[in-house]
Length: 75
Image (cartoon, rainbow, N blue to C red; front, side, top):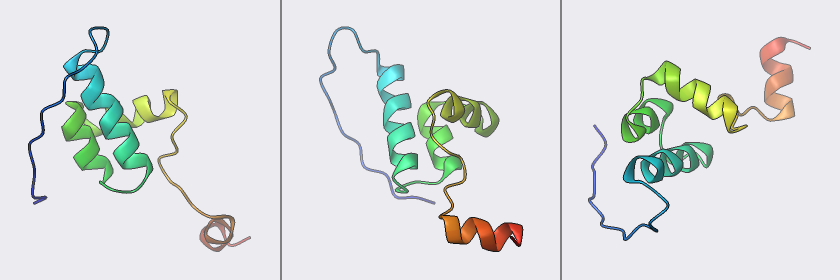
């Protein structure tokens, strides 16, 4: 289990706590700091729903380098 730290942030009036959690989860996943499951839990979504959200935000679920992709596909 991931050790958690609690932080308090003053959000702008036009940004809800849920939106902030979602944006944080997307970014932390995108930069490889947390797993997709951890990000989904942080954002309050199922893994499937979070994967769909990643797609809408143009964040790849699988981030392979060109060499890794060639190796995976056998091309």
